[in-house]
Length: 385
Image (cartoon, rainbow, N blue to C red; front, side, top):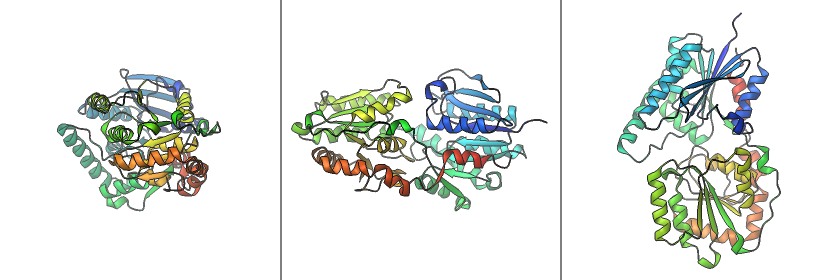
């Protein structure tokens, strides 16, 4: 008898999955694979490599689809996904992302046995800086809205990473209201493995941001905020993340040069093994996340688990994790002066920093972790196989 087939669609590459084997998403997926040797799994991801296929385990095949370099190539990527679905004809499709749910649901219309379990974990308000990008983004989400509205019976389970994400999906497809469960994102135990020591020396303090370098992350706001902090208490700032927008990177460098901040701000855009990332959190005094839009902000969870006091904007899913004044500080986006004032206060007030860090994880237990886990969401998605 032929085994049932489950396809899992995610954005990360599989060729280099060994580098990310301790990443929580990979762990959740491979725990699912290990529990179900009677199921064939097909994993799809995106990478810088040409279209390629790998046998990872006896019951697991992985496909890497070329990463789109231009917005128009997003459609080619979805076509590759559709072809893979047509090849394997899965019983269940777990789509970890927003736009990837479209080819999954369209395929399910032609395959009576296929069900789709969307795991909404991506952004859907940000469209880039170009008019063409804006138009293509609107077209993709208009199609997604239409497909979601007519596909309710094909989605026995639907999950979202935050209330913000869930509300956005419900606006696109009001018929799904009350049918979307929230899940909590898993965090590696590495981030809580070292007890932090708070330094009283103002000149030894460092603020950290972990974010892709693109306008959505508000890094220009951070640069302006650093310029507003008096030199006698101005901390060093480290911005860790890959360059997603080279035009924006050049604009940041120009801004830093104009504000004479080269001695205070450092970028690290190199690829970092996931296991080593926690060292950045452990070396910092304060974590700052000035994003303009985020479905959750997983780096905020990582910082909280690392015992770092967190300052973040009150946008997207961030209020799901931070109770302002208890386990972090929430500020308005695009407000460099408020950000500068908050950083200055916390750097000078060791007691407040320690109090925020002390309540970081305990507050999460009631404020965020009162949901099913990502791994349980996967399990629930295939429970009727």
